[in-house]
Image (cartoon, rainbow, N blue to C red; front, side, top):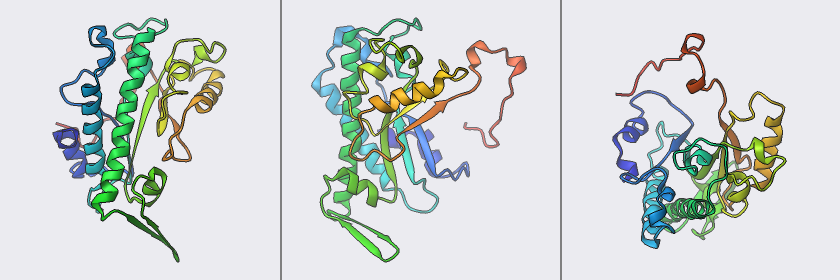
Length: 255
């Protein structure tokens, strides 16, 4: 189970004294490849596989939302690494992903998103079928645990599901680019989207790329007001001379 992973447990126990308000996790089901949609011999992804994916993320969401209050982050953002490269299945060529892989990838994302939504409902029901939020003199009670927006608004800790896109610049003027931003985001509802921005970060196209992602993102009922952010921006380590880069070392390295 994802929530039992020792690395996550160390983080959640605040052993490293990080005191983060928000944590982003590249989350994958244990024992499953991080690109399960790339084995064309198993496509389309079997319903049983997708059901297991949903179950795992539902349990993880429930465990995160139920963390004790002292020192716990207020939000967790679950996603998968640079999905445009992932759908190239080992290739880093700028060519469209196959239609078959894109469909399977969309099914995989839907299953993960469904898991988070089920986990929210499970958490709500575990609290007696409703949540209560107090703010000032106003008190609101959530009586319908299937109301994703209401549960998210009332919960002390929120969990969101998203995907990281990384090939966006070439889609600004070519909507048939075959990348995640145009082929998947408009049809698969996600709480949020993140952008690994190396393809546009040093160009005037960065703002245009963000506008494109935002315009095509199919939001969920629980999507936060700000549901798009940059997750990677800086010096690409694979193409930069280590002699001219600086490293920031963690005072408490993970073992």
